[in-house]
Amino acid sequence: MARLTLEEVGTLTAKALAASGVSPENARSVTASVVAAEAEGVHSHGLARLPTYCAHAKVGKIDGTAVPVLTQPRPALVRVDAADGFAHPAIDLGLPALFAAARTQGLAALAVTNSYNCGVVGYHVDRIARAGFLALAFVNAPASIAPMGGKTPVFGTNPIALAVPQAGADPLVLDQSSSVVAKSEIMVHDQRGQDIPLGWALDADGQPTTSTKAALAGGSMVPSGGHKGAGLALLVELLAAWLTGSSLSIDASSFADNAGGSP
Image (cartoon, rainbow, N blue to C red; front, side, top):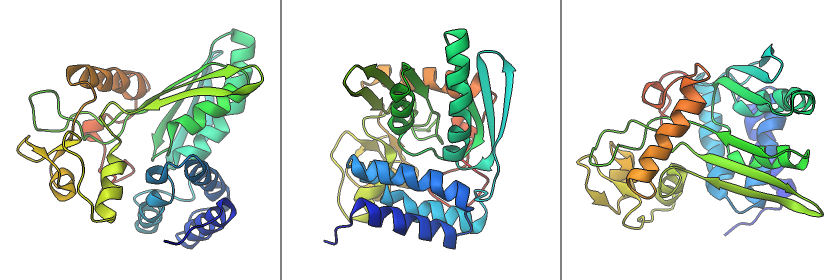
């Protein structure tokens, strides 16, 4: 098995994105996220996602040259329209304004809309905590979780992440999906030709499966903690999508193919 240094991961990612038509500014933001994911051992959100990022940029499912636009409709509210581009540069643009608003208002929120995948959510809240703030993030994703007892996906894996600054130490970071595992873990197992553990996913008939093919072809993810995980997915959906005017999970295009607009 080939092993790459983090520097090599960064170089490979930047070159692949550039070759796929992603602007240098956007490529820098995405590359930093991929490198951070690999540094933490989260391969499913690092290099494993790079081929999909590149494919979607090439076919225009995502606008690799998008320029995010920042507005501040309220003193404590920062909004960034990612313009159907990566979420990473939109978040990078919004963070300084978020920090300034939090310092003057005591509490502030950053809403990112019309965006593509943001990678590891914990990576972004960690940066907020390192600036001295407690951070809580909610992200919705294309539908892949069916309500308990159902078989039709309605909610995304909808992660929630928390970061708390600590004096003299790295921030405490919690980053978890509303499903038993992130869907990207199933994609990694599929790439490696490995079965998945029972309890991760259901097939198209709503039955437990160990087959990645069955899980990805019309199947769904198992919510973490059963009804509680489905409830958490709903909560994240309301905060990340409904409250910000973004696409609901059930209306978002799939991350797994080249059809449709930005997920």
